[in-house]
Length: 281
Image (cartoon, one colour):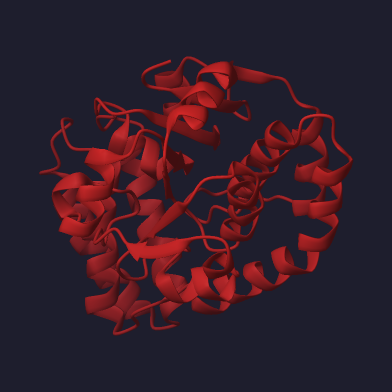
């Protein structure tokens, strides 16, 4: 997905929030905003937003000296999600369609996104999404790909969300490789976060190699690219991965809640809609 004009003020907003998460030093935060502001002038519309995000968070690390500004927030979100895990499993056990319910729960976890300025109550969001109609619903195609694949590549998004991903992984019934960010960026899931979420009990965990808030293929390592090229079913979670992968020609299914008007418009849905969209569907 390309960059839209409405993305540019969002880039500055993300830099400000990340800077404040990293430091109380107003001079450092001002330096960060100055550098990002100058950088924005040269960002072409053809770039994907995660490509710009990678530059922004690299500048955050350089100027503030803090490698993982969202570390404590990620830990808290994982702990909150793990507290809910037993109840989430019961919801799946009691449902008429276990796979679909697990997909809904995985999407519910997608609200744990600190790259957008949104307030949410996680338990409320779970209740809403369990009853919400899909704006895009390629479920039959998803099931067909799942039945015909030997294994699944699952590209994670946010740290606390990975607990919800685990619920879906446990329902897929196929060997799963779970790909995480290479280094901390926003509250996206890293290897450390995925292990803390218990993903390792349900899937093989690998780094995608991407330092950006999305699986930008030119940033990804050989191990990930090998999986990406040979998987018959790829699950892509969240907005950043949609931005990075929406134009690739692979059997990718995007699971997300549209939290941003730019992404909602690109998908031709409304903000707050939920989506199960397959590229090959």
